[in-house]
Image (cartoon, rainbow, N blue to C red; front, top):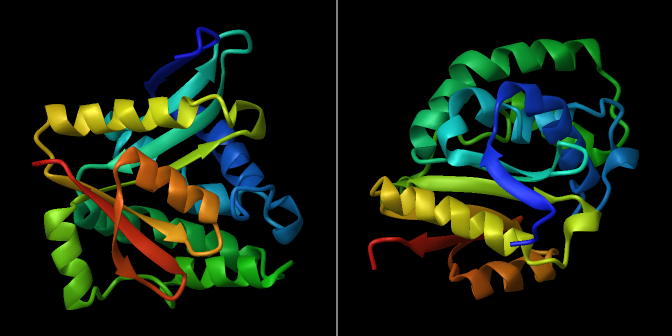
Length: 211
C-alpha cells in the first residue's frame, strides 16, 4: 500500500468527508455536484449511516499529510439488519430534510428522494433478493477521490474489508453496480466478484467467502 495513506475504521466525525467523497464520485464514478440542489443528500443516504450503524465493517483511507479521508469502503455484515436500522432510525429524519428542500435539480435528485421516501426502496424484498442476502449477507459501497484513483488503493480497501469479513466468519458479500459503469464492473470481476443477478439499473455482484 502507498505509504502516504492509511486505512482505519470510520467514525462519526468523518461524515462531512464521506458526504463530499460520495458527491464527488456520485455520477458513474464522476462528480455529481451539478445534479443536486442539496449537496449533502447523496452522502446522507449512501454513506453517513454506516458511521452510526456499522463502523466495525466500514473504513476510510486517510491522507497522512492532511489527516482527512480521501476514500472509503462502507459496509455491513448483515444487510437485512442494516436496512431495518435505516428504515427505523435514519430515513424518517432524512425525509424531514427532503420535505424542506422540495426542488430537484435533476432526475437523479428526484429518484434519490423517491428512494428515501420508500417509493423505490426495497422495504418489501422479493424472494430472489432474500435468497441473495442469505448467501451473501454483507454489502458495501466504495469510492475514491479522483486523485487516489489508479493507485491500486481500491484493491487495498477491498482486501482490508474482505479480510475483516473472513475473520468474523461472514459467508458472503454483494454489491450493486451501475450497468453504465463498465470500468467498475471490470474492477470488481478482477477482485473476484461475479454477476449473480441482473437488475434494471445494472448488476448485483457477489463473492462467496466460504470457498
